[in-house]
Length: 392
Ligand SMILES: [Zn+2]
Ligand SMILES: [Zn+2]
Image 1: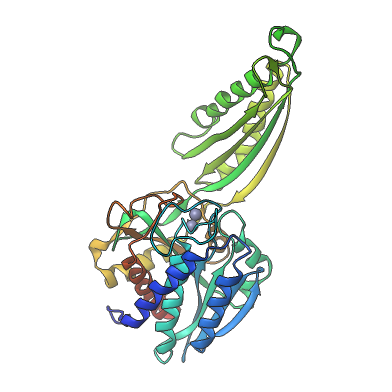
Image 2: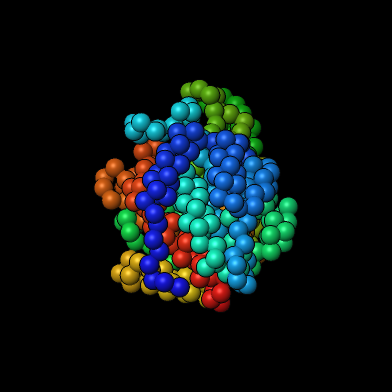
């Protein structure tokens, strides 16, 4: 392929307009009706085959090249977050309590921009490009539902690539990593059952607050004492509720938290360790408990060969100095399900150029430098033109 990818100015301008439009009208997971209608309509206008209603609100566009080659999936997630936007630009969220604070508005704009460039180049295109516009990444498991519905087989996906805009990288920088890149994420709900009573008579009650406090402390020993120190893991208790007033020992306390790992074997050991710690602590205090562990996303593991290939390709495109090795990030991504199914590479695209664009993803003031859309489009187009023939 050529080392340069020209993105016409009209495509870049439309990407900005699309991003702002989607940003202004954010939709939560599996409710991306307006967004997916825009996507479907735009793909259709580009002469791309459109399949709607995949995993409820997902859309898949299929573009067949003129030459034989593999089928490559390019993925964009479409959902927003249930949180208020704190920016005051003129395209800020028009929906109370819903905001595109993770940059998925940009992902939609990037993939539509790439589709526009590629649809003009179908004579140079080998293989088939499947544009996966995915619903419900933020905890909804849209990727898993797409897979369960058979989308990978239906569209014959052989390789998958996806990107995430991030403010932790400067504009123009992309980051790749071989192997585990983002963490697994599982959630726990714990109820500690004691016996309520008068605050002045602790010996006649079983105090769920003290027991729950001991559980919080003891859970920190799961990582520090029971997990191999060279294997990163996090157990965070993020919610602890009990009681109503000054002088009543309540009968129960509830805790919620998250477990993160970079290794499916470590992840698999966590439920039993956590149960044991909670059981022992509750037993020592005369309390009982219930534990509900909700499995979340798996570890996002980039295929080593795909990561090396994509990194080299993008380094040729952007220059060696604009491509770095990504650290492992404790966030999680449901692209992980695609990466479990087919050889894949997920990468980061930097979107930070100032204080305004330096707020972390999921912050109420998260915003991107829109030049990052151009990097996203160029890298996506490069993969689409090259990978059907040359990806390992
Ligand atoms: Zn997010
Ligand atoms: Zn995200």
